[in-house]
Image (cartoon, rainbow, N blue to C red):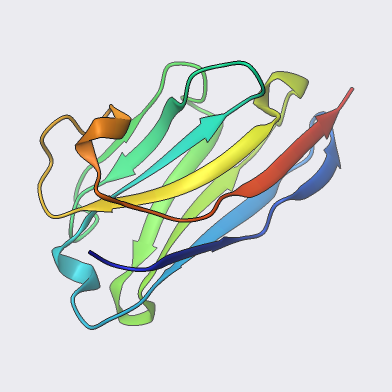
Amino acid sequence: QVQLVESGGGLVQAGDSLRLSCQASGRTFSTYFMGWFRQAPGKEREFVAAITWRGGATYYGDSVKGRFTISRDNAKNTVYLQMNSLKPEDTAVYYCAADRDRSNWSRPTGYDSWGQGTQVTVSS
C-alpha cells in the first residue's frame, strides 16, 4: 500500500475554483492507478475521477464532467483535482485513492489505499 495525504480543500462560493492535491509516499507512485472520490453527509462515497498510471487516460463521474480535471505528476508523487464552476452540491469530503490495477476503478472497493480526506464546502 501507499500512504496518501490530501490538501487544498476549503470554503468557497458557487462558481469558484479549487485545486486539490494528493501527495503519495514511496518511490512507486507511477505504478498506481489513482482516483478521487467524495462523500457528503448521509450519502455513499461517490466516484469523481480517475487517472491511469502515466496519465494517458482519465475518467470522470457524470456529475463533474466538463468541470473537474484530474492530472498527475509522477516526478512529484502527486495527483491533482482541478475543480471549476463549483456548485453547492459539490460539498463533500474528498478522498484520494490508489491501487495497482484498474479493476473496478469507479468503485471504492477498487482501491486499497486511501487518504484521510479534505473538506470542500461550496456556499450558494
